[in-house]
Length: 352
Image 1 (cartoon, rainbow, N blue to C red):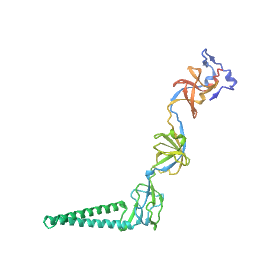
Image 2: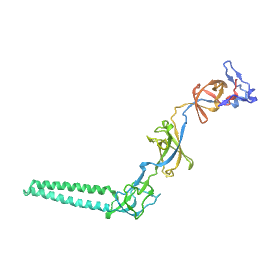
Image 3: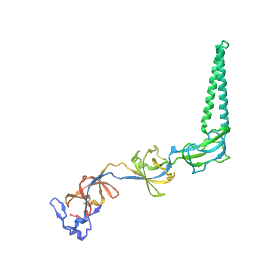
Image 4: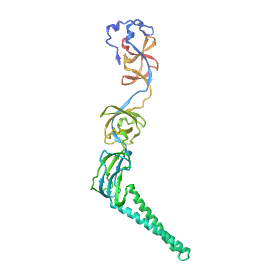
């Protein structure tokens, strides 16, 4: 904003034609015309943003911890951290007594089922020949139902171990997804007794999340679908763009911040979890009139601009402003879209 004070001597002597309505006309031969810039007022969408700290993280659904379904002993380890793996690729082999027991139980249940089926068929034949009581057939039918139930239980138990089960009590842990091994918490010869502890972790980094930590006082400004841009301190000149896809419902008690998640494609896997980022969130602001700050002049404690009423004829007008956004200022009252104002050199039109 320009204050009318200390004009150079040449400017004070510049001839201006003052109209009865207070308008100022710059003569055709005046050198002042070369020092004035006149532009039309336009409606623009403000670029107001909220800048918050953030970080790159693995999308939760793409980070898979791998645990052993049974106790056992690590026989072989086939991967190392950072190694890329494909779906179904063997990662490690365990020798598990429970695995052998499950396979044996399934074989015994299958044999018992075959025996029960034969007994049922024989009881029905004997009854048809008149040589067996009805209760004998009912007993055979009950035994068959029990055998079928036991076979299903044994099969379900074996199926719970997945396709990793092999003969001889060996259990092969396989990768459930395409990705990269992010952690290995086992070694050959190790006994596995805690079935809740991950032995390996595999991450699919083809898509990652940027997490924005929004301060408590700004949480009302963000919503799903807002556009954001990200810069990374470790990647100078790189700007990433995305949209907010999810917002956590609870503030983090230790930081008093709310986390917003922005999915980002990462086909080359050049974005790594735990990288720092600065997240600029595009706030939702209605379109409005924006004028350069260089057009604003202070006159008797009022903010004014010079409006062109005719070619090279200008009149001072009081306006109301809202806020500054970079080099521009939002105008609330006093101007209409399409009106032409002096955007540079207006201080030279000093009519006071």
